[in-house]
Amino acid sequence: MRIDRSRALPIEGAPVVNEGSIDAGGGVRLFYRGVGDGADTIVVLHGGPGFTMDYIAADLEPLAGRHTLIFYDQRGTGGSTLVSDSAGLDAQRFVEDVEAVRLHFALERLALLGHSWGTGLAALTPSGIRNVWRDYCSPTMPPAKMLPRLSGNLSPV
Image (cartoon, rainbow, N blue to C red):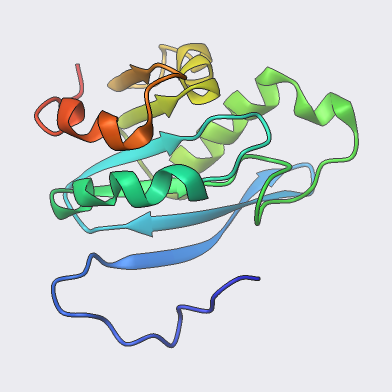
């Protein structure tokens, strides 16, 4: 069950939250949640494949005090389009989805934060994208333990 936040009243001090979907092509729509309104944007790539953004979002939301975080359910998961053809689930399609997210939000700089499967996805993202910043988190590192490590280390290289 999805919660409709479009009519929710903002809570003072709470980060700005926006939700919607992105056209990734081929009939696939990616559900996203943007949290915060900082100048720097970080695209979070969750683990899986098969997981959703839900397990990692709450642990990383404190970063929204200084950054804009974009979480999205990767193809075939959560609120994104279920993909029934296995050809639409190869790693290259997931990489193309990262580019669809970048284009949708008109991001010239792309900062990626990957956890578990998301680290591999970040590593596959072409280095030709301007100013790619990547952080790789071990599949065995719980998301809550990532935050102290990341808080002072979020500048693109």
